Length: 59
Image 1 (cartoon, rainbow, N blue to C red):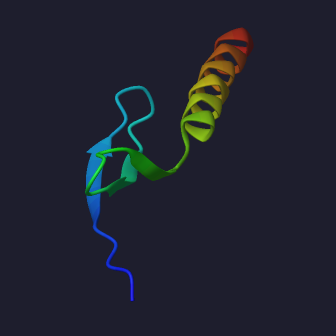
Image 2 (cartoon, rainbow, N blue to C red):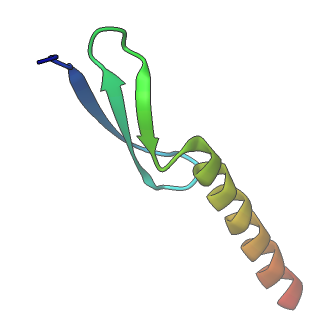
């Protein structure tokens, strides 16, 4: 049986305010998985910008 060492890291994304969970390989320190992904965080950021522009245009 293989023993796999994993660590969890919790943080808050500065741009979106979303909680980010990272699964980190305990031996190498590399990120195995991030939830939500960087792509989703950037998409959320862009959607928030578009929403604020839309509301400014209506005002």
